[in-house]
Length: 104
Picture 1 (cartoon, one colour):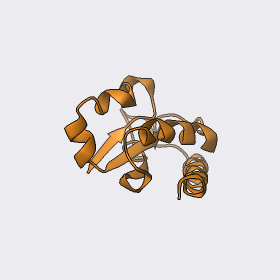
Picture 2 (picture 1 turned 90 degrees about the vertical axis):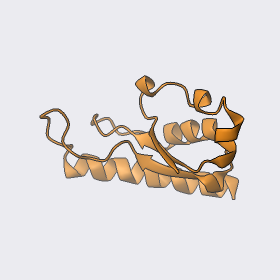
Picture 3 (picture 1 turned 30 degrees about the vertical axis):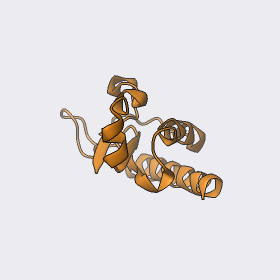
Picture 4 (picture 1 turned 120 degrees about the vertical axis):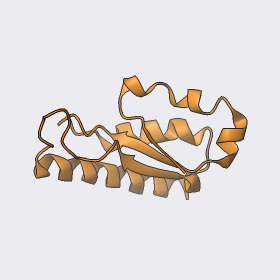
């Protein structure tokens, strides 16, 4: 099981992770789709697009949606407000529902 942060460009390209077919055949992926260092609320549609990149390599039952890293304090910066966190989680949940409807 890999838990990887992929909500920001600094994470690199998702496709690069799957260049080694042996890795792709063995993993279950906790895919980071929420940037916990930003107060910008990701749209469910943007999250779905990111997950669909991974679906080219893994079946849906081997993908879990996660926030990147969690909502802890970063570099002396307080964590997001509960309102922001709740909206981000709602967006991630809506994306999961959209994906289940489309791929199950």
